[in-house]
Image 1 (cartoon, rainbow over the protein chains, first blue to last red):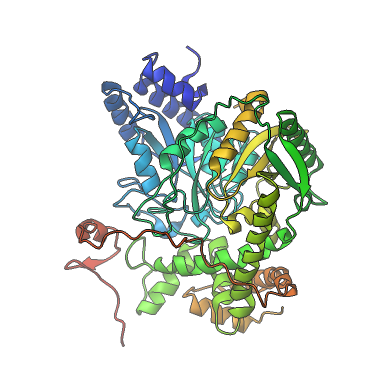
Image 2 (image 1 turned 120 degrees about the horizontal axis):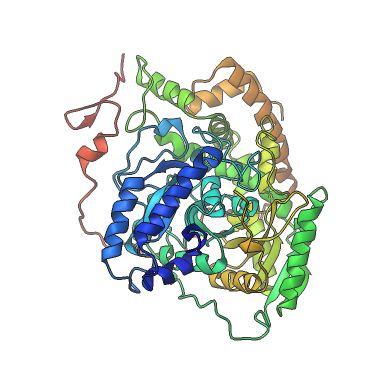
Length: 486
Length: 95
């Protein structure tokens, strides 16, 4: 039999249903692949081998039905989502040794569908970063070139999927943390509409921006996971009651994208971006046209303000959310004589550089005398960015643009320049601020063999349209089937 | 916008962060660069623009107000660095 780990999620489903192989074989193959590649890639922070194998045996004794579409299939979870009984660190030393007592809703839904969790994946500390270099537990390496970053913050999940350790993984996206690593690693990444997937059990970063998303090897596989994790959850007050549609990606129209209007925003093709990225994305847009879509230029005039808006709002929200990490209820505690010193010493010693920087920035933006000029103004400009999209979606159904200005950069390239690192997110931030869904998928490779990602954006709650368009593209091309030689 | 070291210390204190002198100096410089970049938000006239605070829709449902079991106290306390008699133990708050 071919390598089980090379199978797509859908092929795993079919193979298990037809009993061509067992879940135990599948999970064992995944764990072996993880063990073999971890020394080079370091995608995981926790590997749950024993529990996964035990659950696989249970899955092998049970029937696969419509109720448990993931029965026996190995999945990985970004380590900012809680799973009862599995350590959760959020990539931070401040949560060292923390054991959650409850499971995030998105994960629970996967478990309910029969998925087997093989482990927790590496992440920038508290999901703050674009390279996974900010993890307190070591950097994750890109499987296409291990001297390069996988993107971030869901870098561990992107690598686990790209390197065929698992067919799919959960990630989270606050400003691009699913889409940018998906782009750098040549996989398909979906950031759903804000509120579409419950945030219950997600360790909060920027609560008005945080989305649970997913990474898979194709839009077809992404749709399977999305359908399971989407939907209202009474445990998350911002969870939307809008029903998630049953997705049917098989399109009967010919050509498949007939009548679909796709807008290309000029603001997303920056001077100074990597020429191969622009060329790759433009070629992919032409391909969408060949599949029947009508392509036209559009404008999102406030795009250049997304970065400053985001780097006020997200750190401001983070500075409030991370106030709970103080050495009292969980994590290690620094010794000091007074409570106040316990707080400051624990936090100062246990948070990493980027987290400290963002807490400082957010605290500044929220502090007396600066609130209106920074936080208040950023919230208003956020409205303008949202209005840009509303106007655009009066003219077009989808927006097509690059996922990132470059392909994967070298580890350490932005070490001393936080602003240069923030610029890596410039194409993913606007959709986060507008709360709209986006999907990234590979559309080519640059001259040294690194994947180029394209991003499609849709109005709120139109993930179905994103997945359908990406699936049509992937049905006509094979970029998403390319594998890193590792 | 120039940021003084004193200002950095004030923010660190507000955020309850004990920083080294090297960190203070570094963040002073880096925050100044980031705030310079962010200053372009001031270029936009937003006098008539409402702030976006969330995407909650008016139809957001509330769950029924019924008592439910809470998370188990003992298990939650197991994560605490110090506990006593079912409570988190902390150093003295008052001198």
